[in-house]
View 1 (cartoon, helix red, strand yellow):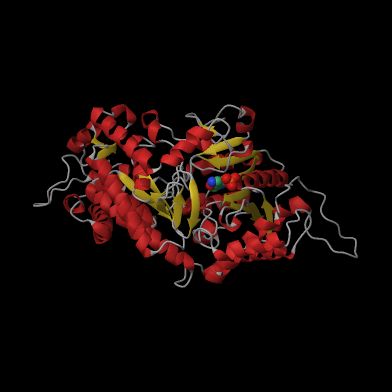
View 2: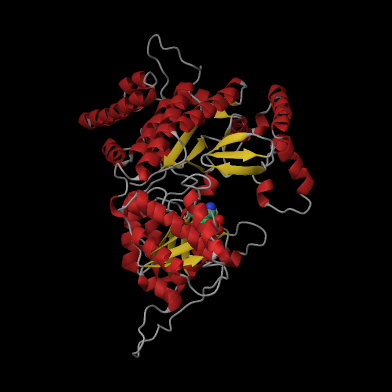
Length: 577
Ligand code: PMP
């Protein structure tokens, strides 16, 4: 069975699921997925335990939408805009002053008309370790992680030194240096791939990987999944319409390109039948194994089946590990799930802060770029079956120096990527801190009945506003977070780095709590009629015991107990049937 956690929760609540299957599925969930399920079930079970006063009349709130703003909210927003302008005056001034000639799509990204006075990017002036500073003298704990690039904090000395040394040596772009051989060997050693190729960006890596898949199979179609992001090249951008057809996304993006893509629902086993039935036309399946926009979806069984099917049908399986690569383990999601794709694309972390993309994979595929190995002094020649790939800065020595420094540090801190996650490996510490932050906040949010969940995978985490996507409440949350000393990124992915101390983590937790509590107190989470109806009519499917005890149990221990209770309840049902 492959359903999303939301669907699973709904199925349980509505008694729409066979108990045997429910138990089986529950046991297959990761600990993190169990936590999310429990949080969802908690929302549904009102607290009736004696002496435990419910925080709210109704069991579920909704983040306010701009359509629901009243005068009180508008006054709050206006006052906040004044305060914010005083907090970051020069950042605001910069936006107005330079927008005529400076083009950046991010300026308009997620802009909500009602919050226009609060919507502008900050101008930074330095960054060091876990902190970032702006031109108005504010210091923030940075959890934006440079969009996933940053795993060792800002300005790690080993990367700066390596780049400086490369600068001193001059930066010839043509030809090779010893550095590129060392970096390539180390890349293959850590990831377990046979061959590796550097590109100028992540977008380009994905674009060329897709081309290699087509060259290898002589087929046209590429499968991608809803909710994933692979850069904005024409080769991989399309949406799925309600009928399941791929459609182009925006102006300048041609339907002819979208026609070459098949957009499927991620993690749904039934979608594999579709791949099977169209296998003769499918060159490759491109998958972000854990989508950075939906880190709670970790469909390992689906991926395993996908791997089997693609081998059987001769389809190239490409993992896009741009964000998960080197972050969730030294071998990325491939290491965590123990699944080997034919090719994987990377960028971000291995670039050490300089622009890069990487394609790594088996020789069978990678040889399609350079024809594979051959020898001197005999008749061997590279294979003529080659496709095009080039880029002036693909092997730029400065970035290769940063790659080598970063990979060397990873190797030092996690000597055996096959057993990554051991107690001495730096990933365990990073993951522990992220889990602690997420679970602490999830307990708080659940206790307060605030409909926000922190999803996490490795050291990537995200705030998910349930029932709302980028409404005023969410936008205000990120502004308040900044004013409370924590910097995030407008596109929503947050990251913990090795530079974050336990004290930093506590400060982030406090800041998130304070920001959400403020919005709660100011009425930016509203009770919905829909919730009221559900409260009155919804029948709890599990058992009375879960219903009574669930909301009374809070905090990590509570969550653990709830997990047991849910499991026990499912077992009891099994007995009854
Ligand atoms: N794939 C994924 C999964 C990404 O997250 C990104 C960028 N965030 C890309 C591809 C594109 O990489 P780049 O921005 O370096 O071109």
